[in-house]
Amino acid sequence: MWMLVWRNVWRRKGRSLITVAAVALSSAILIFFVSLQESTYSLAIDALSRFLTGHLQVQQRDYLDDPKLEDSFLADVSNITRHAVGIRGAVLERLAAGVLLSSGERAFVASIVGVEAEQERPVSYFPRKVTKGSFLEGSDSRQIVLGEGLARNLAADIGGEVTVLGQSSEGSLFIEPLTLSGILKTGNKELDRSIAFVDLETFADIFAMPDKVHSLTVVLKDSRQLPAVRADIEREVLSQHPGLAVRSWQEISPEFAESIALDRASGGIFFISLQAIVLLGLINVLSMSLAERRREHSMLVAIGVRRGFLYRLMLLESLLLSGIGLIAGIALGTLVTEYFGWRGFFIPGMEEAMSEWLIETAVYPHIGVYSLFAGAGIFYGSAFIASFIVYLPVFRISPELALRTSEIGGGR
Image (tube, rainbow, N blue to C red):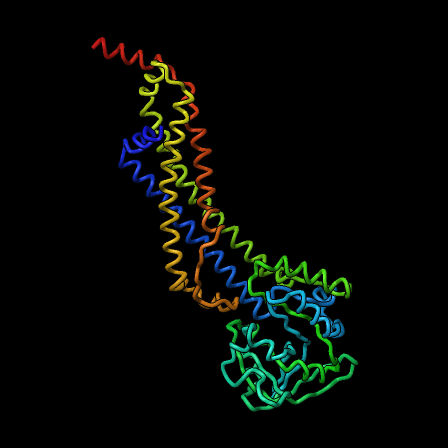
């Protein structure tokens, strides 16, 4: 039967080759762009996690909705969290507050974050973004690092004095002079105008918060492990500290999660439209093939061939044609994706927008199960269903058509 199917497929070589090429090209486009899209999302999530939110955070239950200076907890919870995370990621201790920074006659409101510099360097992107000076290095702990925009607004330079004005956890006002040790540029203008970093112990000292943290930020090596790590942290930490909560990056930055969901949806519309166009072309080819072979099928039915056999034959022809195109498309899509995964794919005109989202301008797409089989698998399934419907008229074929044609031919 397969020999018959193969022969029938290549009866019209030109039409068959065009159909195979269309299926292959659309499948390759789907594989590459789905891989590129998903790799961009992974890059964005990783950048967000390594800059600000982490993949997960342990914090006071009400801190996310209404962050307050007093919503802190003992830093020894970090030991339990590190045990739960294990080798799957790093746990960063952080404190944060709003302050007024001044330098000379200039003053601006900023968010000041207390960090352990040695903890941050291996996993956080902030130390890597220092463009001038250093990120809280040396023996002097009374240092501060500013975003580039904030340093420019304050007219502050390396080695200069920046004064921190704020309110401690005890309610008293303080004025603390610190030395500017570094200036960093993340690429996000709003963040660079409002962010400042100090040593965690320095923050705890000036805000009167010894051995306290506002959040334990978990940065994972593989974001796919997030559900399992979250479950482990909740089991080990929340059982001993029920007042705490474990938040994912989607909860901490819902607008970012929504933008990814919206972009994925718009991309899905494009991919579905492309599949629909190719599928309609395939249906047209199948319909033409069925119409051209109507007399042939009538003659076969007249000599005793079952309609079910003809139906299965036509289905196999359609699936073979689609399958050849699909295999060629997977091979081509994989080749193109692997090439740009090695070289990097630069999206023209998107450099500034990607910097605003803290994303590197080069995307290195990689093949995944979803990108490889989602679009291609859906298309093949759709082609299979379309073939079922298009070839249903085979069951209504009448041998009378062959007889009438034969009689007309005999009369001539």
